[in-house]
Image 1 (spheres, rainbow, N blue to C red):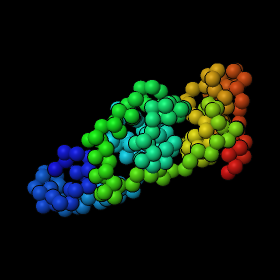
Image 2 (cartoon, helix red, strand yellow; image 1 turned 30 degrees about the vertical axis):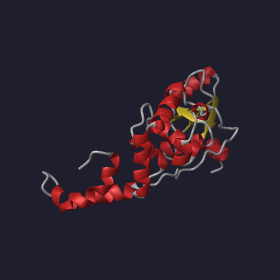
Image 3 (cartoon, one colour; image 1 turned 180 degrees about the vertical axis):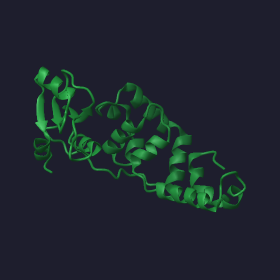
Image 4 (cartoon, rainbow, N blue to C red; image 1 turned 60 degrees about the vertical axis):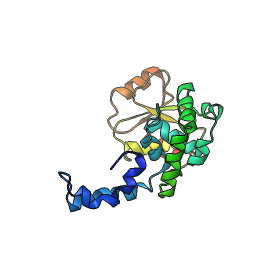
Length: 204
């Protein structure tokens, strides 16, 4: 039943046949079909990752979706345009151009569109902030906000988050009980923000 990606959205045609498969009862089939229908509303980056474009992982898919905002823009992007995006090198740029140059892949995208699959980026566009843009951050200690939320706020403003304090680290955000990363920041004379300072900088 699944030969191409878009066949996932046609499984409803085979409800009776699916019941014959081991482990597929009425409830599991309904859950499967519901998941397929709900996935039509996913943001563009999830679709890009799901297409399996060579060298395009989750992070790269998000970069592309955020930069181009919709599938049509990305499909028409040139090699030179792709290379202008930070962290997109020659190999990834060529892979994306080659993927969308393939008529079979273009046809797949059209079939997905016709099935109602979302082709737009639903996330927040980066708000470039000089306090964060092109800077490397490390989060350490126990923060009041979830760490993934803090990372998202930094990335939305043009910064990036890594796990180790090095000479290339610009700012270390310190929560309670920070440990060795705080000590390393002091040793390297890296700029240190407590969580209140961080919250003030991001305007929360």
